[in-house]
Amino acid sequence: MYVVGSIIARLGSKRLAYKNLLPFAGRPLVGLGVEILRQAKRVDEIVVSTESELIARVALDFGATVLRRPVELAGDDVPSVPVFQHIVENHPCDVHVNFNINFPMCDPAVIDRAVELAERDGEALSKPFAVWAQSVERLANYVDPRNIPSAMQSIFEDERAGPLDVHTEQDLLDTYRAAQGAEPEGLPEGF
Image (cartoon, rainbow, N blue to C red; front, side, top):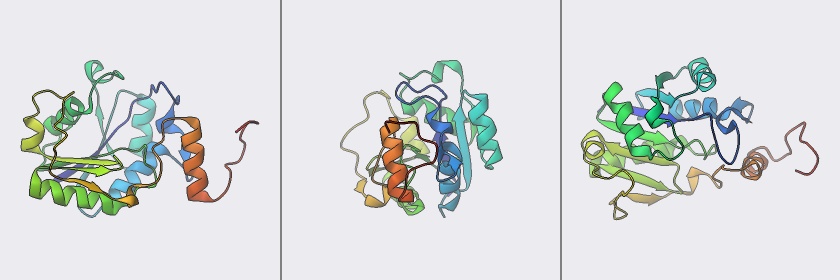
């Protein structure tokens, strides 16, 4: 069973500019995501899908393969499924697992569990929503990528996914404080 682990990372973020490049635990968020995927025992290849040269350079520095995302898949209104399909078209696999790096404290064991469930059931989604895995067959058969069935067999709760979903500066700071037990250096007043 060949497994591709992916991170989908755009440069533009409506809520937190350059989020995927911001430092967390001493590394850019996208680099930390690559490291977490690398620690998962079930992931054979790591692919970062991006439209950004800056993110691509960081991903390469951390040892990931970079897949340049076409313009039609790079907007903030594009659902994840077509991006996942683009990844598996270019990086064939049996199971695809996407790690949402908005959860920078996710334990790699959550990724392994999602892969295991996707192998068994065709799909798995962690709750909180840090990891989503699909068999290639399941991924190829989504009719409407904006309307994923909510009755997915393998939605599994796992607190190891991490306590916070980073979408704003405050989320990032709260996650940093939870992981580091301290304030980051050089914060502007008011944080």
